[in-house]
Length: 193
Image (cartoon, rainbow, N blue to C red; front, side):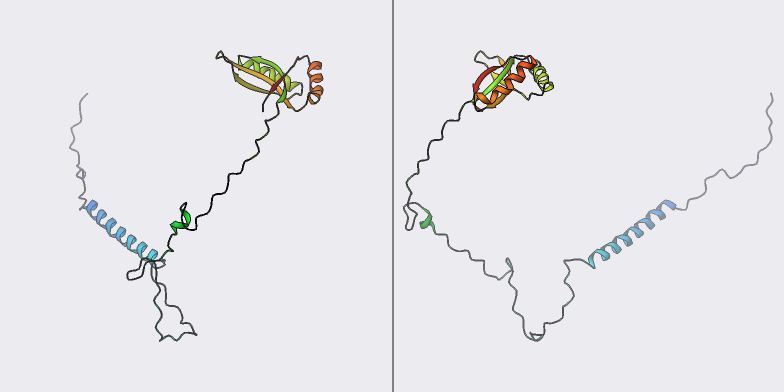
């Protein structure tokens, strides 16, 4: 195959001169940004609470030519410091003049020891999952119980499933009959709340 060797007309393959378009664009952007910043500053400062407000109409009771007394603000140069009343140490310190006398200590009555409460213990397990299973079985039978964790003297941890507390043995009899009907055996134990 032979190649056709015709002269080709050259089109403008040279890039057009940009004429500094990038620099002109940056300059125009800076000018527009400065104008926008100046406009925003003017907009926000025209309603600034820190600018002095417009003069108010003079009060009719006070003539406008009369000098007004200066308003003293704390921390204003030339003002006297705010005086605080003297602290009276002698009235507060013990054995001082005017010190309050010590009242004899009031003996409070010793609180009565909390009565031991009665519980119905259904089971005690080392595995907490077994205690939760027993609680679930009791809940299916309509009996609310709780699982208490206890540390034994030999270092083992037991999970006790109990019902209660009851104030008197007579209060737990209806629950004991419901447990017996459901097939559970319960032991009466004493414990503090």
